[in-house]
Length: 133
Image (tube, rainbow, N blue to C red; front, top):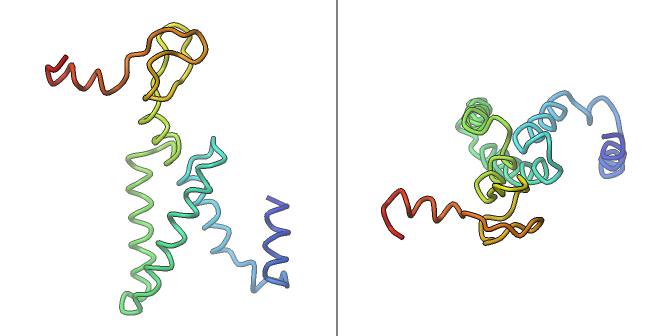
């Protein structure tokens, strides 16, 4: 966090009370929680999703401060349905767990990368629910 602050101050060319406001601190916390606190790539992905969203909502001058409410509703809905954040939710959707060694593997793999046990992909499970073989 300190290194990121130093880079941000260098980018602004000045670090003072007016440039480092409280709203920026809340925005950084929202990025971390939205992306997933247990990952490195989650908050980075959240920045690439949420920052353009805030800029886009800010372009609607007729909304006024309503844009902050819309942004908060979007973040709250995502966190309601993905409480651990975006990255862990996405990881759970694209990985399967090995029944033998409990190692997480990509859903596209047919064998475990650690113990080479056969994996049952999520596609196969869905096909079985529908009735296809």
